[in-house]
Each structure stands twice: as C-alpha cells, then as structure tokens.
Image 1 (cartoon, rainbow, N blue to C red):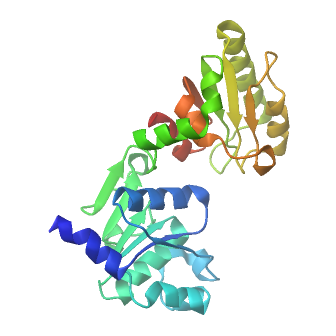
Image 2: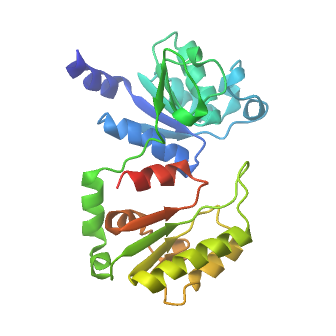
Length: 267
C-alpha cells in the first residue's frame, strides 16, 4: 500500500499553502520533501474578512483570493494539501470540505479551531494541542539533516579555514509576547565578547528581517576581537546560514524563533 502513495499523490497533485512567511513555508516544504514529493507552492494573501476571521469560517472562501489562484488550487482538487500558519488553515480546511474528502488536508501549527476540521494537524508540544489526529513535535519541522549539512560544507568551504571554536549567533528580534530590548542585546554581546576573548576562535553572525536596524548596526562591529563573518541581508552577499550550521562548534539563537532553535538542535 505504501508503495502506491507517492505515485498517486504525484499524479493527483500536492500543494503547499502558506501566507508567504519564510518560516511557515520552510516547515511545509520540509514535510513534503521528507515524503519525497514535489509540491506546487501557493502563497495566499487572503482578502477581508477571511484574513480577520481565520479558519473558523470558510464560507465563500473562493472569493478570498484572486480567481486564478483559486482555480489553481481546486481544478483538480489536490490529493494532498499541506498548510502552515493561520491563513493557510482557511484554505486547507476549505479544500477538504469542498472536495468532499478528496483532498487530504494537513495543517502545521495550531489552527486555533477544532483539529477535526483537518485530516492531520502537526503542532509543537508547547502548544498543548491534543486530539486523535494531532501529532506533537518537540520543535518545528525543518529540512536539516546530514545530507544537507554535507552539501552546505561543500558550498561554503572557506568556513573550514576559520579559527575554532566557531561561535554562530543567529539573531531574530522582538515579537508579540516576547520582549527583547537593547539592554538585552547589549548583555548578549558582552557575554559573547568575553567568550571570544577567553577562547579565541571565530564569531559568525546572521540577522533576520525581524532584527531591528539598531541591533544590526551594533552587531556589525560589536566584538573587540573582531567578527569573522556578518550577514545582515542581501547586500552582504549570499546567505551563509546553511554554512554556519554546518561548521558551527557552538550556536547561540535568540529565543524568538522556534524554527532557528530547532534547526540549530538538528546539527
């Protein structure tokens, strides 16, 4: 039976649905890739009122997005729809209902409605979501494995020449429910600077879209003993994130990103 699943899904179609947020899309694609499926990706920007109501109401959902996008999602119904995030949950629930079960709907992250509206819900354990069709994970889904780390080492060979220990700092930023201020960042910089002075080695820093501009500028020239590599965006060249993970001796992650924490643990 298992040998039939992949051919059937390839024939009938697999789609990944997100709001376009990188963290959400990365999780949904990681699941599809782990199943050795090649999905189409639909990034939905829901119109009002669906973007306010969320998955609690799916009536008229075809009007929540451009007509061409709804047609791409529903003609034919995909065999498998993988959604991640609240806006995606509107669509994955609707596909399951309107297709009369022809679409197997998988929702990643707590949809904040009864999980019974989906075939499968995958949510981190800290969300506290429990139901017969819920799989709890320790962190977030991600694509990091030995093969990807080996590929990253091959793609960033210069990192192998950096002095050890290689300390990687992955920086996000403040978000709702988590206060990270300038004083907190100052303490973090001072701690890493003391480690660097004591142990030597290299410091490699990466920031994200959520990182305040003030933090980014401070981090760029923060360490008395020098920062070996700093990446703050496309202006700094190719994103070295995968290479950082592959070569790190120790990784420090700001606590705002479950995705980055999970991927760091996978190394």
